[in-house]
Amino acid sequence: MKKEKIGTFLVPAAFFLLAAYILFSARFMSERDAMFPNLIAWIMLLISVIEGISEWRKKQVGFRFAGNNLAKVAEVIAALFGYIFLLGKIGFYFDTLILSMAIMWLLGYRRKIVLIMASLLITTVVFVIFYVLIKVPLPTLFF
Image (cartoon, rainbow, N blue to C red; front, top):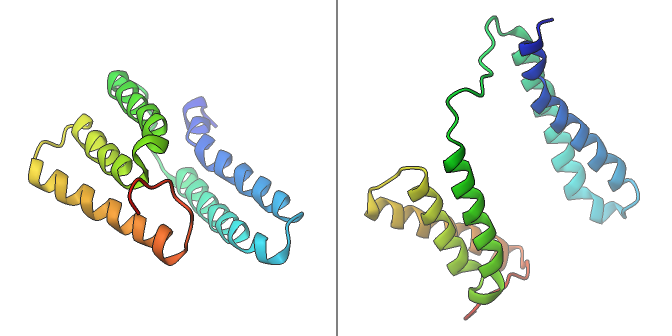
């Protein structure tokens, strides 16, 4: 097997190992507490196996680092650090709204009305699912 081909198996292997670790760690939880981690771990295992098989069956290797824009990666990482810093200060909703708009802008999307509407929709759906339906405590400014 060629060196380039082996490189394409790194991500499926990493997800497989992470899923195995989650399954192992969940053994020490109560059945109720372990339900969600086990579900996620089994899904990760399945996807990593499917991805590994599909990479193995590919004829050409499409794994290349050439041409990646490291400046964009650095900008997104800086935005994520800003998100973490502001989370406790302005709350989950506004911070996530700003983050989603900033990342779309940094990655080159410039249609402002769609950018704002998509960010509002994404943030509202995530907020309603976690804060309202599942009742996960989130840092909020007004709610």
